[in-house]
Length: 112
Length: 440
View 1 (spheres, rainbow over the protein chains, first blue to last red):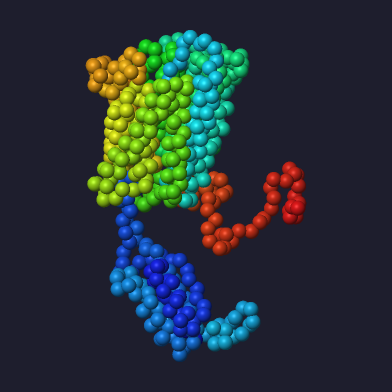
View 2 (view 1 turned 180 degrees about the horizontal axis):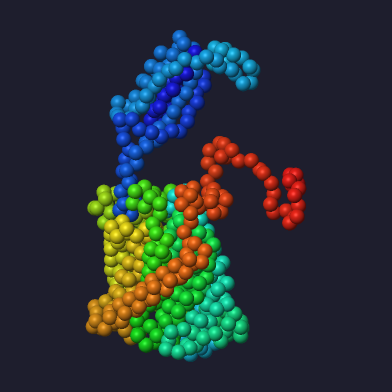
């Protein structure tokens, strides 16, 4: 199994969710996050005082899938999240030892 | 402020309007609490709001014991202070009259001015004052600073009103210049916030700021038009002047920041409206509509630049009590000398209406004396309280945020985890109870 994590633009979350649902991935964890990569922050002005805001709002998506599905899921996320502009984010995958479904106690791929 | 010198019985219309105005002005202080509260960081919003709310309580008690008689009892000499004929409001009955309204109502109306003036100062020392020290400060400051200045300007036998002849309809000197100069003094006594000029201290909730500004604007009709102390044509003219100046201030500020910074901001709109309303406060009873428009516009434009002085000069007037209230208060008070018209004042005319420069000079003297007195005495009070009990919160408390450190509360419980909160015990039970069982 693999844990796929994506940090993407918040307004692309719905598109990613629809893409994943369309390919049979029924489950996703989304966290509000903030950070920066090559895209830096923006400037805000309060009573004439300018502030540079470095951390940009992002969404962090996490989904556990079977090894055979991992590449396809990552491709789907990348396609759905892409705007072509700087700051589209990153997607990565790491191996997962075990997964347990809390309600039933199922372990391994059955729990995904 | 037009104190009728020959009372000829109670006027129910005047009384009804002043009752309503008193309630309007009282609402300005909770409005100010939101206006200020939204501008600070989320870790000290409750403390900011609390400084305004506690002013309502403290100043009310002080006003009704010694404040009102010292400010408005007959003069004790030289127009400097009233005497204590009515200490604790003794001898003032429901049938006592001031002009055509009950004296008790006049005292309540004036009380609401004293409250908000004390509360306004808190904006200069946001995020870093010890709460007990602030409570003590509001009491002492009301007696030593607000009360004498109110007597000089608002009492018919006060020296600025009676001898100098400067005009101040609803408190450009008493409220605005006073709170601004006092705020500057206190900001200097406490020193800047940790991280001032380095960290971004953004307003944490602008909708709160705009809601507060709206409540201030609403209450300002009572503040200014209530100061007519009557339901009449002057009150109507004052009300419309107030509206025009607030709008001109708002537009003036927005035009400047759109050209200068590239964006018209909500904080700019709120600040500009308040600047215009501040400037028309002293002048609302002496100018016509074009005068009100000019004064409001001048305040909006000038204050949009004045708020940067604190960064250049290095004093942390956190929420711009100086940049908005002091500066607009000076503008509005001094420009009476230019725009005053006899159709409003009944006698005095400003420069533009054939009155010469004399009135402007009187206005300037009133501003300088009130500013110097407020600054000096407030600085002394601040230093004394700092020596006595410490005025500045500890560095740790300031960094943690005063909401948690001082009040043991947090303003916002966002997110699904409620910060991992667990019920521990009930402290409000019987004094000797050690029973920690759940209460029914």
